[in-house]
Image (cartoon, rainbow over all chains, first blue to last red):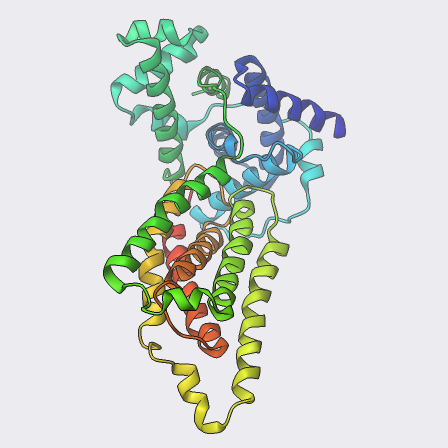
Length: 178
Length: 213
């Protein structure tokens, strides 16, 4: 567990400095943790689990400025996951209380299978077409932003801004999904 | 959309993130909000006529120390409450303790007075407008501060909004001291505290609405 915390924190620090590969590795490690944490706490709907994993990854990415670099990483990520889980229960009108002290569970839970997210697909479909094309260009065979911008007819700088805006808008749409 | 695809898109959006985002947000809103409170004091309320001599006395500074202590404690609490996983108990207890202390000192002062002097001491000359004025001076800053913290991630938007409001109320009450000539602990303990809490209530309302994520 401590070992995982050390790796996550090192990756997060590099990601915050602008290292995209480290950031990607962090999110990949985290998605497995999130899926394992959410699965047993949700009523067995794999698509719901995946929606929540994706919504949480978006929040972790968009709100990483809220992590204090002098603190451990896992409690921060766990608090975000827990907030998103409680918010999901609230939206679905499930009355439950998430116990406060299972950051260890969060790091140690066994992996679960990967699935598609429905909410994200729906949220993506609702984006303005330029933003949607940009995300699809970036995600399909991981084109660079410069190439993706070229495809959608804008400069790399403009593509950067547009991608960030599109991701923020996706996060907002997912939050209001149900 | 698959989660791996989402991660690819998120990784493409990696950029360097500056440190101390919450502190910057709060500092920025102070640099915007405190001058607004000062401008309102100068052009709407007016400085207290005896300001020059008051600055030489102790009570002017006691009032300022009280409201500044509130903003420091609640500012520290707000910085923690907008970060997931951080606890703000000590800072919140300090802020609450400062309010309790000033209220107790005010009570002691009232008890030590002749019965006939108590109500005038408690009401001063401006009890009907004091709390309202502090709210009016602090409201713009509360809105600015909550907007400035929207990129943070408070796990309780309501509490975080309220504490941000208390911080702004402390700043606004400090500025209000330039206008208000009241000079009893009983008055400050009641009406100043209520004014700061009114800013807190405004923060609760705004936080519920604007700090959700």
